[in-house]
Image 1 (cartoon, rainbow, N blue to C red):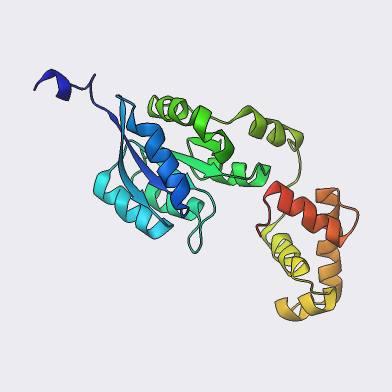
Image 2 (cartoon, rainbow, N blue to C red):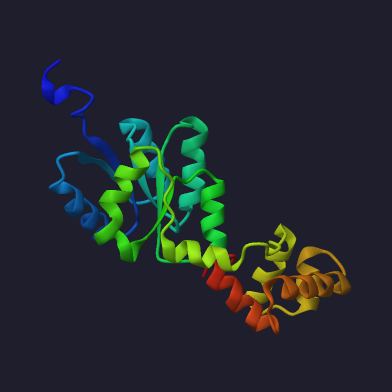
Length: 214
């Protein structure tokens, strides 16, 4: 084994999964001049990202949180079921605490805002490769605001999705096969949990926190 192939000299292999070509180009440019890391693959969606991971077995994967079809979290879960030691950095434009918690609970090693890629990407890759978990201060601050909050149940989220589409309580009840009073009960609880004034405010809060996506 020569010195270039020794463990101490081995470069960190990176896979980028994002549906925006300009962002992938930016990641490629950011890593191109780094002697300790190399971009080994790119993917435009979750399923392709999973295939690329199986092929390259990268040390660190950069995964867009929101992609058409399969989300980044779904793709990461699939990878981690097959490769439990995989290290994934979730990339997003959103600061919502619900998205952060979902990503971290699903096994993400770090959460990086796309606006911070230019300054933080390379150091975050190195930190995650070293076994650290990274949450940006701006994201951590949003999470701290909601410590102790009661999360919405899956049914309450489902009801809120119908509300976001403009459905009345009666229409939602028909869609879900329950009584209108049951829907009113769900609405009352989710308004309280979100500290929302009304239905429209509840949808706005849920979108901001990443409980709902657009």
